[in-house]
Length: 261
Image (cartoon, rainbow, N blue to C red):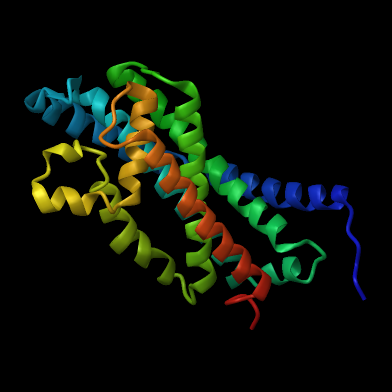
C-alpha cells in the first residue's frame, strides 16, 4: 500500500529536522561555535600578524588580507563536515534514525534537513570568523554574488561528504579518520596560506587536483578579486563534486546502507 504525502507534509518534515539540527547547534554553542573562533583567532595572530610581517605581500595583497578568505573557507569546510558526521552518526548510534526511515518522508527530504543544518552551522561560524578577521585586517568584498554562492556551494559539498562518512561509520572513531588524514591535509594544501604559483613544477600540478584549491581561490576572488585558477573552472568543479556526492548520498539513503541493522 502506497502512502500519499502532501507537499505540506514534506515541508513539515524538513522543517522539523532543520529545527532539531539548529537547536542542537545553539544548545551546545560552547562546542559548536566557540572553538572555531578561538582557533581562527590564533591563526590570525600567528600567521597573519607575526609571520605576515616577514612575508609582506602575497600576489600584491597584504598577507593578512590574503589569508582571510582561506581561513573563512577552512572554518566553513570543517564545520559543515563535522556537524553532519557527528549529528547523523549520533542518530544512528541512538537508533532514532530508524524513526525517519519508517516515516513516509522521502530520502531527499531527510537529506535536505541534515544538510541544511550543517550549512547553517558552517555559515554561522564563517560569519563569526569574518567578524574576527575584521578586527585584524578590515572587511573586503570584491563580488558579493560570487562570495555568497561559493561559500554556500562549498558548505553543501562538504555536508554531503560528511553524511556519506557518517553512513559508513561503524564507531565514533570512524568519523574522525577522514577529517584527520584526508580533509585536513587537503585543506592546508589548498591555498589557504599561500598562492599555488609559489609551488615548484610537479607539486603545483598535483595541487591542481585538489578540489579545495578551487573553492578557496573562488572565494578569494569574491573577496579580494584575485585567484590562481579560472573562476568558471572552479564553479564547474564545485558543482560537479556536489552533483556526484548528492547522487551517492540519495542512493545510500534510499537503500538504507549502513542504517538498517
